[in-house]
Length: 391
Ligand SMILES: NC(=O)c1ccc[n+]([C@@H]2O[C@H](COP(=O)([O-])OP(=O)(O)OC[C@H]3O[C@@H](n4cnc5c(N)ncnc54)[C@H](O)[C@@H]3O)[C@@H](O)[C@H]2O)c1
Image (tube, rainbow, N blue to C red; front, side, top):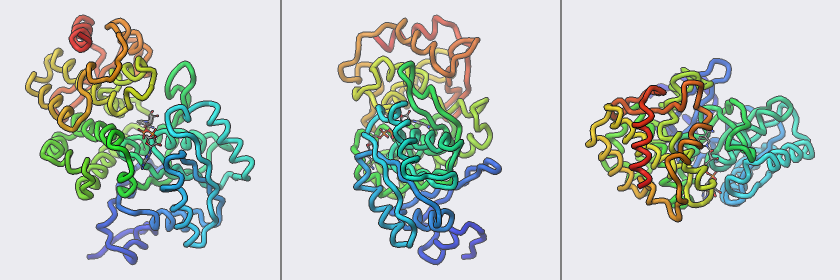
């Protein structure tokens, strides 16, 4: 087989191992273009990439306490073996609370103390929390330094590490402060998913199913056809194909609309409802982000049916699949769910970042695998869907 490429990492892989072991997805964004590498046990490849592009620069790993020993230290060893400078490591507590102004400021102070320069590299090793935090640190430190993403949750591999949205939370709201800032590369290593708790794996799966629903009915059918269960059991073929297909779809969408002026909004399928539920559950352990998205997609399906787009059989296909993989599909599935009313939901959704002068925008399904954003619907229809959902 002949490989035509000028990518140094790929050229190395041709020598080191068969290229088919690594899938590569391109994110086309002119000068900000980058590649997503998908495979198993990628430390060697990550170290090669860093040695090639940042071998003589100072390196800074940002991670959380759950993954420091598991993944940040082994990556350090792989870099040491290449003769590259050992990276400095900063580990923050696991969980959403680390996306705070306080921890963000700590990260910046640490970079200054350790002598990070404008040509230094930040390596984000962790889930979506670390990717969002490290990305915003990279975007703002000295007006922007390079960073790469090594996502360690399924959710981060298929969603948050790709596309350049970075953010931290402030007391007034989640992700209210941030920047669009693209990484220089993303490495999705399926091996790291083995240590991920099943609940986190399922939460990530919700985002995978979302890509099928919003963009690709063939991919949705593939997931329905037993591959969802296979990937939740760590079948590598299923994991790699699913992560690759999601990254391809996200790359295509982001390449068309980096700053969410149009088509990128489709990625918010289920999110307007989901974010409201997360907020009403105080972003605590009752509801992971992906679980909220799973319930949000069921609500979006019911709303789409109410608006005359989906049939009730379509809604049942979606809800049955979400239940089958062990994700929550209705309000009663949330443990210790707070007593809330339709008005409570409406108030939170009205504050959604996607709301505009015309009202709350929703992503609705016109058919399975085809979506659009709409703000034209009867308030009664929305009210009725929420009423049925909460009662
Ligand atoms: N930037 C974006 O486009 C985007 C998109 C979606 C979500 N997000 C953000 O992503 C965050 C959620 O991400 P998440 O679900 O990955 O949560 P997370 O980063 O909190 O990770 C979930 C948990 O898994 C642990 N963990 C991570 N990798 C592990 C591994 N391999 N083995 C064992 N434990 C591991 C973490 O320590 C944490 O306790 C939210 O803050 C959300 O706002 C961002």
